[in-house]
Amino acid sequence: MKTPQEILKKYWNHSHFRPPQEAIINNVLKGNDTMVLLPTSGGKSICYQIPTLLLNGVCIVISPLIALIKDQVNGLIEKNIKAIALTSELSQDEIVIAFDNLQFGNFQFLYLSPEKLQSKFIQEKIKQLNVSLIAIDEAHCISEWGHDFRPSYLELKILRDLQPSASIIALTATATQKVLDDIQLQLQIENATLFKKSFQRKNLAFHVITTEDIYGKLLQILTKLKASVIIYTNSRKHTKEVSHFLKQHHFKSSYYHGGLSTVEKNEAFNNWISDKTPIMVATNAFGMGIDKTNVRAVIHINIPNSLENFIQEAGRAGRDGKDSYSLLLKNKSSIFETENKFNSNVATTKFIKVIYFNLNQFYAVSRGELPLQSFNFSLHEFCSIYQLNLLQTYNAIKILERENIILLDENYNKKSSLKFLISNQKLFNYLENNTSKTNLIQLILRSYGGVFEHFTVINEFIIAKKLDVHKNDVIKTLKELHSQGILQYLHADTTSKLTFLKVREDAYTINGISKNIERQNSLKQQKLRSVIDFIENNKICRPVQLLHYFNEKDAVPCGKCDVCMAKNLKTTAIKTIASQILNLLKEKPLTSMELSTILSFSEKEILNSLKILLEKNKITITSQNKFKLHF
Image (cartoon, rainbow, N blue to C red; front, side, top):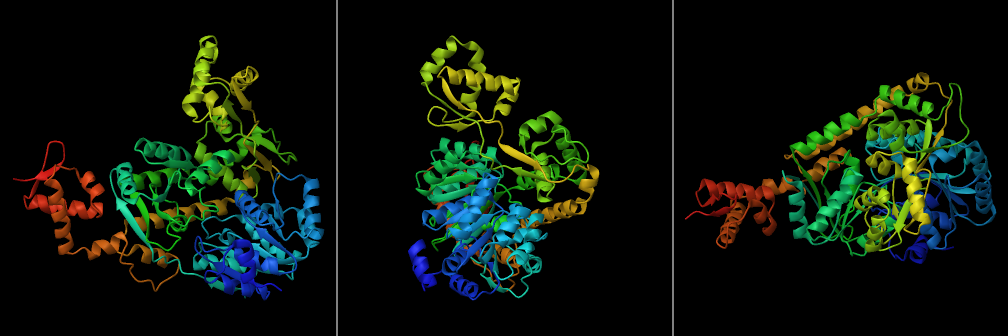
């Protein structure tokens, strides 16, 4: 029989495990229930994948993200390991074939979402399998105290009844003690062995930087770093704007968010991973499968929604063990905007009742009815018809999904795209004789980049709204352009599929989940408050604050975060900075921003030194707001 080390070397090309992977694998191989709390990049997946390859039977893997499921399955298939994912793309017949392969075709991994597990048909099929191991990924989702609670996870205990002899391994990257206790209770694995690795990253320096000019400060940082970087923003639109801004200042940058097509995502990722564009501007959709070791910094230019998200994202820097940075840029305005955005977009029970009622009206669902079919769904169109806030409505729909009232399949892969087939010059020649199409074509050229080079995902409804015409008019014109050979247009009816899971009972349906809604809203408010408290606390070492949040009470100051460095700033250090400033000003007057770009000190240290030099009349300020020597 092969050993875990042999399997690791054969399939993963590694000869050594990271601690405590080997101990976890050995515990699983003994048939013990296991809980794993490893920080980002801790290598959680091989803790169940390697044992499965050594055991006789199937491993059922529960994961909340379809994209993550597909990524894991594709990764196993590339290693010639047989794995199957049960997604909405499979028909009933294909699901039957999948289970036949699991039962008779030596397939070893079955990946599915917690929602799929609720199907009685799938439960019966699972009962017939020889299951050796059940892996619950993102296990914090089972706890109402977790940062991403999903009620569907509460149904996972049925796996115990379906496969009583299989052992369970629950894995998460972020969980407080309260969440860990809840995982054990809900999964009925109270005797599970807990393997926990400290969140402390000694090579990672945490700095919270207060600056009124966030974009300007970003340029300073990138000028000094000249390395692979991830910049996290809080909106899809922002990723594109920031990336474009960086390109204007001669930085090679890509952007990534959940709304891009698969082709666009792969192109952005590959350009970044190969260092063709070493700077990636992204929403938190960029996280899955990142295994780049030379990321020198993760920069947050917006405030994260929770410390769990923050530490996961920050942990993507310095995986090679070399000195790296987690930098969060903030000011009073950004804190106010974050709180205001949270409050204006929170989906209350009252608002969710409105959304649920409108959804039923939109699809003409009668009271007491449960439609059997799924519906094409466009969030933009729905919000436009009912005059609703887009983000608040999306949050409400996600809550309805979380509470198993509806199912929204956002991975339903039907998005319209187009590509121009003629040159820019020929296109303008065409418009001279077809002026009725000018507004549409010019809007597409302004709104979407790369439409002459590759297929680009478009949204006909947004285009129609900007042109103040009906969506069908846009579709009709694009089809005409397609038939004329001007562009190739791949039309899709929708980007999402919506399914009702419960009989329509209006307010009664929502009243039953109202306590859950308000409790989760309150928890999210608390988590945001924890982030703001963290960034405003400049008295306690940053890692100490983070480690205390995750129940590591014996942490000692790191000596390298902004708080520790401020405490260690001695008079001699101020003299050194002042001396370097005076030497630079001998050459020419400079602004504080220019000095911060040149000098390897923090903005706060430089400003403090400038203040002292002004007080001592060593320097003065010009009418251009530059500092110069005082003669």
